[in-house]
Length: 261
Ligand SMILES: O=C(O)[C@H](O)[C@@H](O)[C@H](O)[C@H](O)COP(=O)(O)O
Image 1: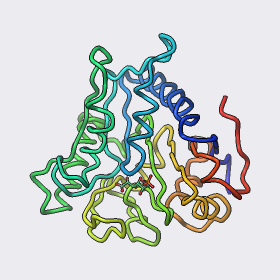
Image 2: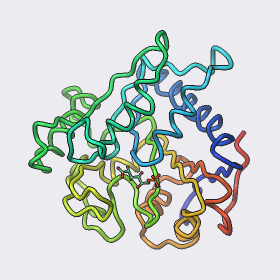
Image 3: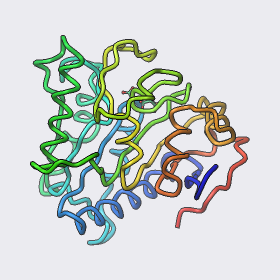
Image 4: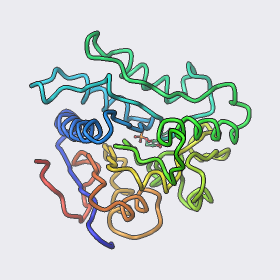
């Protein structure tokens, strides 16, 4: 694997993983605020929002341990082409698991859901969400790519991340920041997703992968350069990429494990 390798931080369980994930997110938050007075983060669906809430809604242990939600700008790394109150909506999931539970006085993040006017045209839906990113990241300048402060990603059992699936032509998309997919192997089929160039240009990337069901794919992601979307992100981002896992998900994975400082 070229260059520095991704960080792999295994923990006994999610209860042990959550405080470390919080610490990592707060470090990325503080760096983002120092850089441009805002923390621009992209989040995924699946099991991530629940783990994210466990990490972020814990009582701060110090002033430095505070989540400054009023400085947060939340985007979706991928989203399903469904209404915002639909059971398949990542926005609905993040709202239920996290946003609705943020205590008063902790501040409220700016959140960018998809524009559901365009649900019937996934290309329009993707273009409109890309414009949301342009308005936030470019502000009239012509920037080549948005640079997120942190992307929180999941890893599917087939090695997909966001809505980028193994062998899918979308993996070769190099111009669009946000792309539509209408044949997602993971239902529902119609979605939009950040593209690989956007993902790999994030300042930091953190994957959260837990459970024994992930151990086979984790071996493939970490042991062979096989073009799996998660492996492509690892190889393109090196030490900017960290994996927060439990021991069950990395059983048998021969890869340098780091103690989370
Ligand atoms: O919208 C989605 O479906 C998710 O963004 C997707 O990419 C998810 O992160 C992976 O499928 C892992 O999901 P689990 O963590 O639930 O296994």
